[in-house]
Image (cartoon, rainbow, N blue to C red; front, side, top):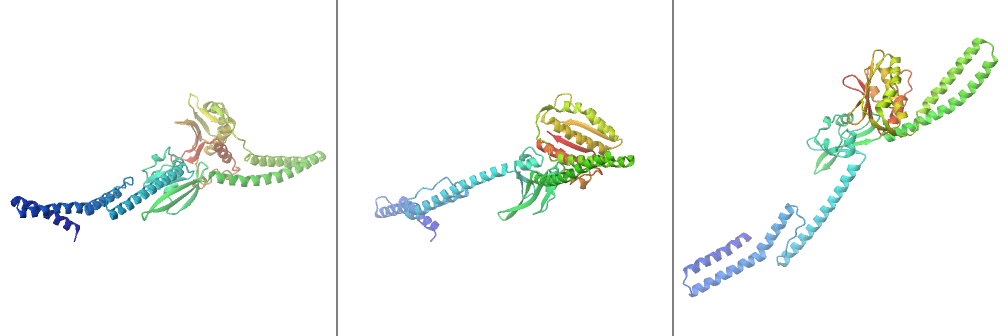
Length: 425
């Protein structure tokens, strides 16, 4: 028999007894019998509530606690041995769930801290294809001040070079790219399973330091070998030719020997220039007025542009722009960039130098033919050059010095067809 039926019968019994008591004459035998039945019904109702309804209500309260995920509350004993065993089991389960939940929260908090301070950029994508979160490294790589700024965007809405790269990744694709600021990144699109649903996420790993160390190790070895072999040979050759020149009276032959000496010295200078690329001193930084440094070197920049037939325009603020740099190294960097810009602009071209804000960003612009897509992928690569007489050392030197200063920089041909080298101090 169902519990609700038993409860209904007891209630009907009590109600019937009360009605009979109202109809019967007080003091009669029937009145006393019905009164006894009424007391019995009340007693049965109390026993039923104590033995059945109270445990059921306690269990129902426990289910409500589980539904509300309230693992701190506990159920009270109901005075029934079997029911109290269930209550004890339930309270023990709630204590275990509370402990596990606390442990899970601590682990998640620790994981969030690890992700946030990780040098690897991490971006999670929601079911709607929108960025649901990311860490500080990802924000920095994608040119955001905080991770919150990129939350809510789609990957293809990120207006940066690296953003264009990751938005074009297919599932499980890994791509290594070198950007126009000499930075090298490995970008991956992966996925994890949650509740049977695949959730994509992006990993961005900065490989610049490792790649530059490997490249430096390679070209240092090559240059050392070249310098050793060539300089040893050239020293002996030049010595012999100088002696021969003194002994020979034929002017034509002396002239030929002199030309060979000059060529040997040029070869020595060539090797020395290569060797200088790996002997860049550590920057000795001081506070410098960038506008004053540029104004003092303006005649040099103008002569460089004049030699290529281009013109120079400088727009510098009147107020002081203080930067913490090595003035000698940065001056050489700017000179190299201006030289490249002037050679690119060529006859009738224009080179522009100005400082942008907020922050301190030096921009050197030229209106030359621009950088091809093939060349853009190879910028700042050791020994890569688009010049017929170039050695591929100028941008390598620039990259080394700016990285040692902690500057952010880029070289690209913009949609307006102007090529800009930006240095953010």
